[in-house]
Length: 499
Image 1: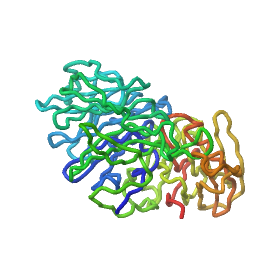
Image 2: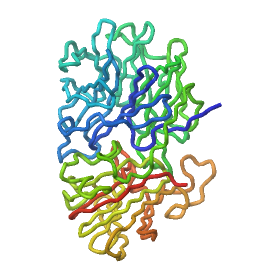
Image 3: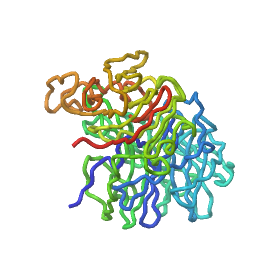
Image 4: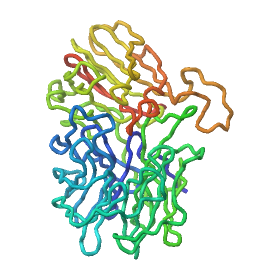
């Protein structure tokens, strides 16, 4: 029997929303304070996904002021296809709130935002038989809107707010058979996360809850995948049903540290007595009938293309003058826009860390500038390996503390910097733990990060201090290139799982 491995989208890809058009599937995720916003993916089988763009890829679409807090910005989108056009609704908590954008093709271009005067976050879109468009938001409240103008036509009015757990959010409304189903997340997006559902004969209700709520939750279990919730349903081309949802993979002793953020998982769904039944979410499941792998994406970017690949992201903005692929053909040249990664405004171009065990490397020529590689959670939690003024140094920023933990001289000219992430042979040495201890794997932290220059290790640091449980927030690690003085040219960047 063919199987697939979870997560189907590793790394910081939370709040997934999916829609099907024929035999093609499209999925969008939250992006928070990063630009461009809302990555969008394509699949032919729900298992193998490739990024085809970003929905909010123009500054006029995505306003993230310098004061945008880490984990601010763009919250959970909903992606739908209706009347031959793609529609996406989301929330920019750092701007005007809820918005709709649309496009003829999922790759874009997407329209400028149309703003919706509705409170709450995590908006949803659904259309009924007479063409009315319904928008549900956290709370849970429902309104009838005009998707072209954003005008609220009816409501909002309260519907069903779950089983009484905190933070009823992420509503999705579906018309299946004779019923309208309202599926929500509740319990908070951490270990108490759960998926619950209710149904009614009309979008206006009244909604009756499923007798087996929550229909999916891993709370209070020792399963390796935790925080399961914020789900979306999709019917496959063959009539089977599936659920995409977020989850985490914590490691280490209590509280258990997840460093990649909330990732996208896939689980089959059965319908019993008129209700969807899903879970548990396992590391390996029987695969859907369709099976359509894409050619593996190259791990190395040689910066030979005319534009940056869609997986490259930057905090809040990426000014045109801060980067260039043409000044030094075959290289990405970064120009300093701020003197430190500890404050907004620094030039940083990175990508999500997608594998627990991996290597991130780059070849750079610092010239007279200062720059390097960083693994980042936010301005107060990052580890940096930088080169400048003939010196390579490892810098740790942990909350209020910033310290250079190692340095060595380097000759003028290009150098290769490497960050190696490992989940075995940890630092500090692991403490012997019972074999059955959940999440413990015999170590306090999730991983160890080694920092090397031209193959020589300068330092190794405990990974727990660049983890959600220390930094807080909704994102995960982003590893990338930065410059804090002058200009630095990067010949290539490589991100690959450890052998």
